[in-house]
Length: 95
Image (cartoon, rainbow, N blue to C red):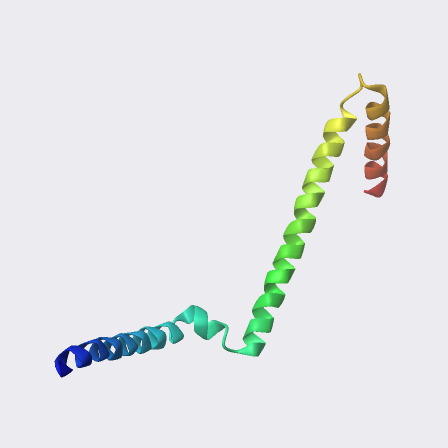
């Protein structure tokens, strides 16, 4: 009867040991070590923010210029064509 009681306890202890080993393995992973340092975390997030901001500006510039160019070629719709021509004129004046 005592062996039945001790057997589940041994399984729990084995499970705890296995969990400790996995936790130690996880703590030694490069991703976890990278985020353990506050200055490194701040630096990584700063670089990620710069990249996101630059990508957003470049993408929006390309998108707006493509839309403006496309709309400037539309002459058969009077309102849109005039508006697009005005945008194209201002873009040329900005160069």
